[in-house]
Length: 426
Image (cartoon, rainbow, N blue to C red; front, side):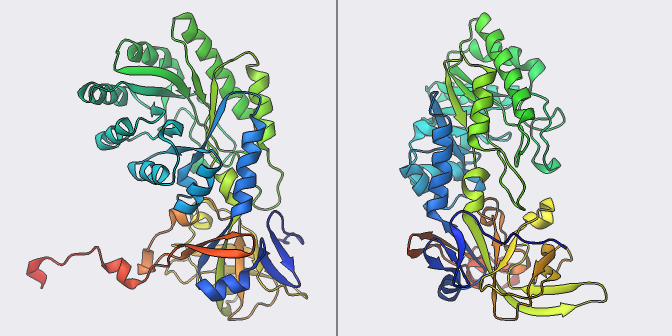
């Protein structure tokens, strides 16, 4: 049986037996906005961003938040006001970042499968860098840049063949992964790109994965990158930017994790004399621990071998436990003393995989009470779906003593509004 930590961290804490986000009771949030409901701490997001910005203050740098982690406009706006940039991987994320006030010159566009329209939107917006991931993509970017008579600023993403100690689904720097150009072919790619005036080759990019706790693989990837930068310099290709990706992990179950300062120290030790600009793309490490998912207990039940707490949130709202076998701490919003029982917290989706927490140590919570699932600010709502025709939950941001609705809860009419019935079925 997993034993939860007795104390919560950051901007989530119990006060007189009630769980608070900053200065706001989560019971009040649940009653006001309903459940399921994602709740984010503004102050935690800002604090996490500033930790990265401070860690790399000794070198020219750009913190480009990985929008895929949480793309809500209010989250992006608060980061934009801090001076943060954006790492985007789709036309939609680009539009969200620009609408939130992130300047295009602080935006990088990655992704292994950019469509022509997406590349054109990036060129039109005059973003900082398009991160090209294949020779085919380089050729398409060149053609579109020539067509629109606008040179494309690009970085080339390499695959350093470095395995991060993380879940296989979020490892992105191994030879078998779909991302980047093999490092053995990188020099040829830079040579090719450098022969065309339409391509302004200014950067090198790598990203080895997500939820990285051990930084040794990062050190290896940096060594590969800086060796390549020196080799290119000897050929007359001088690079201004090194985009080292993101991927720093957070502590989901109390495990020790690396901090931004640790990553900055490794970068400094690996290439102390490099004078270019670093681009760092944290996502989870900025928003992950800033969010909780509030859910209401519906029923308690027991099988022959297990006990269940059935809640109103399911795998469509929060898929990480199902998809990645992720473990998240679960807390009763109203603190209870007494004996704890190992229960599976399960949702209403018609799948046996719909388990939000297994063997979770909880007191005897009753129907009508609320639970808070911790550390869901990253890859929570952004991966939510309407499976089982379940409308997606609301999102709320707390700042100090106030809670603000930042995304309305969907209802059934939102599910059916885009659908069209063909004439032969009317």
